[in-house]
Length: 403
Ligand SMILES: Cc1ncc(COP(=O)(O)O)c(C=O)c1O
Image (cartoon, rainbow, N blue to C red; front, side, top):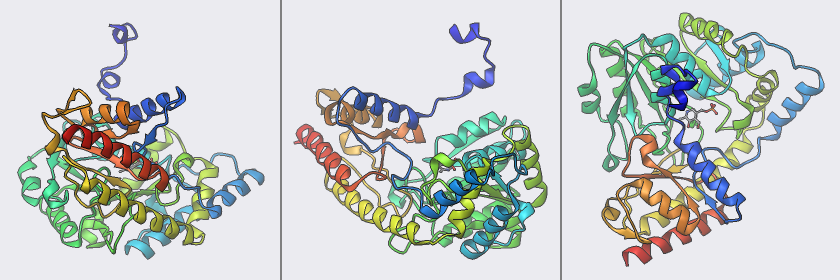
């Protein structure tokens, strides 16, 4: 009723608020009220932005580099991104194929807007990052979820992909390393994706934002590197947020065939214009800087991952696949269904999240936010002390309830 009074558009009314942010907000509100909360809900590295990036940002401010830039980004940054894509991913792009945006989130938004026709179906492997279905709907498209299975470590299922294709299918979105599951698609899966995309004449959006965060020898394979035909049909999305702990700087980028890149830049020119000039300089500093800061972060994440996975696997009621990348663990809770914890009946991950927050002061994200109500997501982008404390409290609640 209230919304009708304000005559909000149907489009606005169709948007689901971000569930990850909602849990974060609730945990912060409890913390502000004096509760000691361990927050496993966050989706950002807890590290400082590396000095090479921060110093470049400061220098940009000092020298007055604070005006509009070309919409698609400053030349030196687009060149540095091309060098990075070539060096790390085996991808050959020219600077005019790169569009720098206000975070990878905007790169994805641009891509859906320019590639998705009203009524087009977009295949999204599930569990998925919350934003994909919303952005697809905002582009007039129809999100079609394709289930992946925890028993296979949430790898893509070629048969499920095949079964989801219709004459309206236009796009496939892949995200490896994956949020929320931490799955990293092995080369054979990426090859299967590439073959699938070509056979059905689809476009591919490859969200590679967690690329640097892979553990124990897991290797990130960029689908566009498999062949020129695949590259022609792919938009590669990446950014500064996760690799360089630069979430607040808001810089991301996309690489695509020239007509697609131009369309994305034209669109962006009427939405936000260029990404922040200071943020662009900071990303340039990060790309040109010493890789040691990123490597140290990965070593620390791996130690936390190992600890968290082991502890969760020892807890009753949970099934915990081994994540090879990103900074999330995504346990499901088949052993908790229909049981009571702290007097509350557990019917899904939302119930478990509520019990953990209220009883243990531990914030996790209900799996429903990612299309998998029977799971919860825990982020280990928080200190080892917090991880130990949070898991101790969580284990206590589970053991008390399950005996
Ligand atoms: C899978 C995935 N893609 C893209 C993003 C967007 O990152 P940003 O807009 O900060 O570059 C996120 C952030 O959480 C993410 O998890």
